[in-house]
Length: 327
Image 1 (cartoon, rainbow, N blue to C red):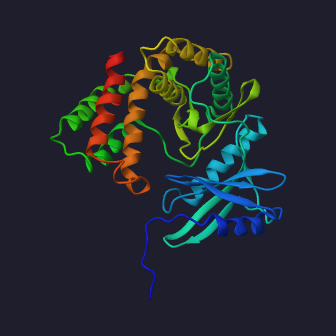
Image 2: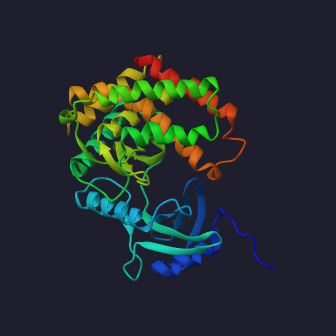
Image 3: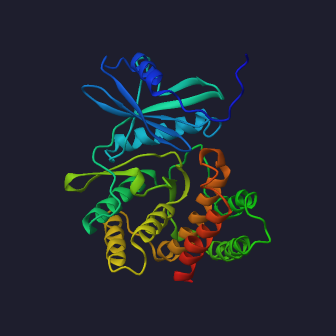
């Protein structure tokens, strides 16, 4: 009987263990377990001596060139001693593995393990350390360019809302909110004094889920899957957005944590007044962008998660609320 074609599969950790053991000449006592299945699938790989993370990219999500560019960036950051999880070569000197999955060829990369643990709520000093690490990354990536996506207002706001539109009809109140915000945000961003905005390579996903914190506030950054080119303050805006999402704007701890983060960032790389002015608008734009990603990669989430009710709550409770705080 012919196997029925699939659009997405989860690779067996048991068989992946044998695959990695051969490719990287790992110790015989290898353990492999699935950590996370989302847009990409993440596996924890442990030997008696080392711990690694193996990422399997979803089918047709990233091209081999895009992954090569991500690897190039990580090696550059490692060279400059920026604290990031970096790629590991196999016994033949290759970074990218080609895996023949049921849906087609999928790419995989082995990364060093980021020591520490994920923490939702940080002390002020940790926010300072994260701001400093982000600026150290931006020091290296400023004026650099990858053969990857350019994060323009069109990509963030126009392309994203087209993706959302396939799940949310135009005549709904929530889609009208998005279209209204799109118009307002595009106007704000079009009035930017670009001479006051630093550009380069951005991570675009720096938040608690992609940071491991070790004792003494040693922070390691990982998961550069969304890295691309754009205004460096996009990363700052996204982090501020995430702190707001976790701490809530009305809480007493919110403002000091943002202040410590910004202070840590500016201890390395000062922000211009124009960059600071844009942070709220960029934050709202990134909310919309990532909602578009969820819609685009619908098959990577369950149907019960991504539905009309979820979209309406996201738009009213997160996107519109964040915009209304600042405008």
